[in-house]
Length: 120
Image (tube, rainbow, N blue to C red; front, side, top):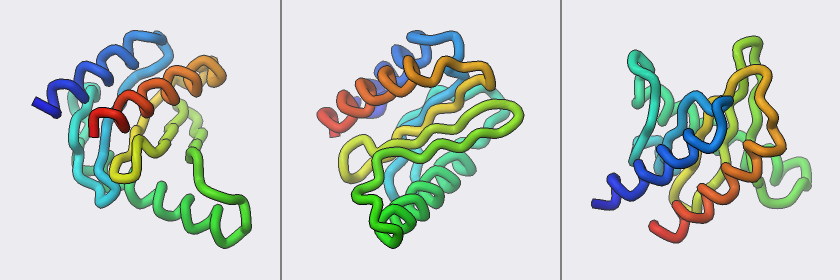
């Protein structure tokens, strides 16, 4: 039941912008809780990478006195990966196209993360 609710939030998030290609909710230990990913994309790999990057970002923010981590943004030639906490036990990961309007995506991701946090 909870997975279905999380999937509905992700489906709605993906529908808010044509620039969002995929999204997933991952536990902080790297297990995929719900995902709306393109076929061929490995859920386990996305989960593990998201948890590892968020953990590293968390440590970096603390060590460099930047306060609590809010998000991790990775830019590659083929697009963006955005990770943000969705409560204390989950991470919301979003894949976006290279020409994405990030300001709008940040807003939509923040709203989705708050909804997910409320569910968990």
